Structure formats: C-alpha cells, structure tokens
Image (tube, rainbow, N blue to C red; front, side, top):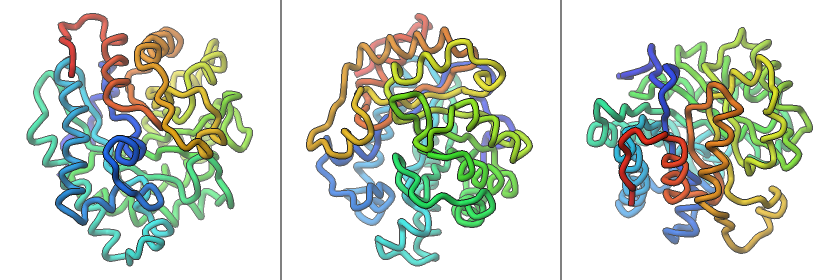
Length: 321
C-alpha cells in the first residue's frame, strides 16, 4: 500500500524533481504513435512497457545524481472514461490499466529509491476535455462524479497522492480535489496557463487557487502551474499574496509559443534547456514554497537536468547524463 500518503515528503521543504513532457517525448523522440496522447495505452505491449520504464528511469537517475526527491507521475493523464472509451476501453479494462500504471511506478520505486532520494508515487489525472481548451465546462459536482472512478482506483493501490494536471478552469480542479478527499488521498492541482499569465478561461491564477480552496475547504496539499514558458507568468507571481504560498510546483514549457501555435506546429519546439534552468532558479526567488520542479510540453531529461543543476545549490550533485 501507499508509503507516503499520510506524510508527503515534498511538503517538508526539500527539492523534488518530476518528469518532463512524457507524451511529446514518446511521440517525437521515441517514435510512438499515441492516439489521443494516451501514454497508458503503451502498457498493452512489451515494447510499450519497456519504453515507459526507460523514460522514468532516466529521470529517476537525474534525481539520484543530484540527491533530490522524485515524484513518479503515472502515465494516466488520458486514463479517464471519455478518453479511454475512444480507445476501446470499457470500465473494467480502464480500471486495470490504471492499476497496472501504478504497479509499474511501484516497481520503479523499489529499484531506484534511496534515503537521499525519496520517491513519491502520484496518480496522474488529466482533464475531461483538452489540456489547452476546456470546451464544455463542468460544475464541480459534475467533475467530482466524472473523475471519482479513477481516483478511487488509485486509492486502492500504492499511489501516495493524486495530481490533476492541465486543469483549464477552477471547477474541474475543485471536483477532483473533492474526489480525492473522499477517497482519502492527498491531491495537488496544476493549472494550465496562457501567454498572458491567466488560465484559458481568463481566470487569474489567484482566482483559480482561491476558488478551489473556497469550494473544497482548502483540500489540495498544494498547487502547480503547467504548459507555459516562465516568462508568461513570472510577472504575475511577483508580489503574490497568500495564494502564491500555495504554489509548490512548476511544470513549464521550454517553448515560448502559444498553445495555438504549439497545436499547429509540425515540429517540436524544445527551447533552451540551459535557459530554462536559469528561469526556474529565478522563479524560486519569487515563490517561497517552490520545491517541485519538472517540465511540460516539449521538455525532456535535458531540461530537467539543467533545472536540477540550477536549483540544487551545490548539494554535492554530479552531472547527470
């Protein structure tokens, strides 16, 4: 069962890494066809499982090299009912896929965790709609109902927590937070940010965090931001009040392109890993509780390596391959 569910080590103030853009890495670097960006579907083949294992092991090695904690985010961003149905999964097959995903994470933790580099297993929950465009928006009650099955499945596994990634509007984040609270799982909510530093719906980051906290009794353990270059939201965070202290994680893009430009681009814009590392170090000077560092669309192990080097302040780290 869960190792850290009642005591998430990333809340103690030490740095934790997480991975980069798993779907873009698997598609553009590893050559996989991922219908609907569903990485969990790779669990159905030996080749796919091997690719997932290799993907996560590379990041776990970076964390070990820098003596940092690591959050294993399961490949289940698309493993919810609507998306899974498009891939031919019924409810039983979907539950089995979510369970297998966490089992793989537990296997990897068993191999790679050390005293200096604790590993937290997070069950990744994605949006019902697109990660850039909410489409039809749900109420918090509807979102809780929709996401509860996946969250309950995670609660019966070795998952230590749930992380809702690429949330485009507050109500869906609130619904997932309620589902996690009901299942007894800690939860983090990560919001997609546009080039203007706001959510795709136009809500400010402050409004999003404060709304979810108000509607859930501050259920999330912390909040994160994803899918934008640091320059798109850095100025919004400067001088932030109480809501800024709730931000503990960043999964930024290395690309400065807008979401519309990224959607239409035939190539992968992976930006400058060295520059991104410096940007993260600058963000840590703004956000007092920023300790969870990873990447989003177009980022890979190179970016996370540079982020770790820039933010680790010389804790005996050695260069990671």
